[in-house]
Amino acid sequence: QVRLVESGGGLMQAGESLTIFCVATGVSGANFRNSEMGWYRQAPGNQRELVATIGTDGNTNYAASAKGRFTISRNNARNTVYLEMNSLKPEDTAVYYCHLATFNYWGQGTQVTVSS
Image (cartoon, rainbow, N blue to C red):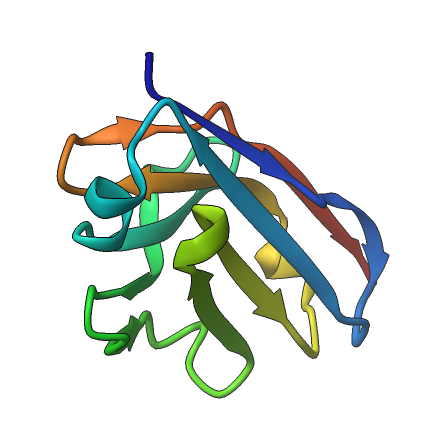
């Protein structure tokens, strides 16, 4: 059974940095390596939105709100994808979800709260 488990969320102050990560279990290394991975977020009352994606070749794509502040990376040997978030803002407050694109699997999310 494929599971995506996000970790690392928390309560932060504006301007601080935080790295969250997602571990995929129940999926082979090859399937993980061959899948685009993504981070999405959903704030209360809002729809889930794209934050960043990373392709199998390492190419990255960012939402305008994340560009220049967030960095997505992956460690295929550990079936893990990371999201480094710098210069956090209160509007970054949301539940952050990991997405394994090939199988369209989602994690349960990790809460990031940024206070001003």
